[in-house]
Image (cartoon, rainbow, N blue to C red):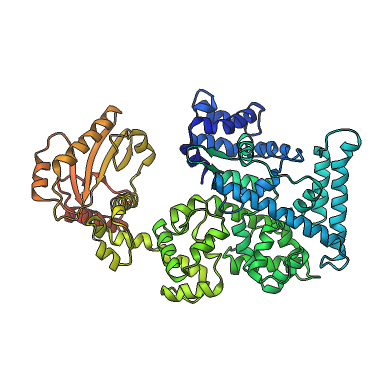
Length: 614
């Protein structure tokens, strides 16, 4: 969930710790101080009076300083911050109820103790599967860490790892090629592992500004922007979902080679090894620099292999960079941009339709998703729910085995030639157009016809869907559908559906009505509604160029009452007419629809289509 959306949900007390930390960073003259000053100058220069969108923008500007703020906490040997961050940055863990977070924390602590015990046994066992060189690396790192931690006790001081010692140890781990998981296991084989009360853990995360906690919902929120930043703290270059996407493109012998290099059980199957590699915290850069290639391969061959991986399998053409390091950085940047992009890749309806049909073909998918992404709700296969966890259609398809993809494609008549995943995404891209083709059926609330045409929707959702589609059409006519301005104007009592902002304080108000009955005939109630919107706009010194009422059709009585009304500049527009205007506009010479054509009481379809064809 985006930071702005989380801030919108919370009260001032719940945001307080986060705001204080940002305020403190700003007071120390951060590198983007000038840009921050510009943002704050629009308010009274107090962060508490800045809107949530600008707080989100300021957070992006101080991200480097925020990382420094978190890194300072790692000097506290018993902070367990690495354990907590590793839980938080896993895909699916950005929204957690307290009891669920408590369970994940408890499981993590149990798992950590078991792994430490196994590692210590491996180090002491002459017949262990660890290579001699890997044992040596582990022992060197463990010995240096032990000295750094215990030398304070020798000098009668509290055991602590100083910032200088920490920087040396981090550099040592990098030179030894240790993964984050390997580092963590060795660290906690020396540092005490003690379970902390969950409320203390939450308070610590909240006071550090990492997480928000809603007492009302008993839920922890970690913003998408924060997750990206925390990954950098843990030297994790890409999200697990992109790591998985890359690993699934590699041949089985390469996966086995990576697993062997990082002490992963060779008895596991390929999918299990992939998940262990991801959870092992193995550097993505290290993976693409060394781990995926045969021994003795030249640098030129490495670059060629990486280019082929990106172009043929990830569909990324012309990966930037002349050196191998540059190319890897370009791939990481590509994944970062994909993650930041709010576009889903297909329409929201397409995503929902894909999930519904996946659930029919693969009944275990809901359970698999819950387990893989550690989601606590019973049913998780809805687009809105998954997008709150920053999980997009491609991320879901990446979890499926080849056999499951093949079954799903056959079950749903999807193209079989080429890349399976891309074919599936392409198949569901057109759902928005499918809805637009059925715009009139949505207006008439004709569930049977919609079902026949491949659209599954609840009757209770039709009103909102009609409004959404009407917005899409007006955007297609090149109008500025200004939701932000509309939300500023709307009150709890008066809530207009659509506002078209023409600029210079001129607007068009659009109201949407669906009806099963032939001939919409509720003029008295709708006129009261529209007049209240009109008064609201006039109070804000706006000129109303036109009020449009969009419905499936209008009764003769309704049209007559509209003609007799002297208080509003109201025009009636049927769903069928608006749909035909939209289609005609696509092939017309106009870049923007000339709104002066909306001049009749009942909009004359034939006249407008003729005008557009000239």
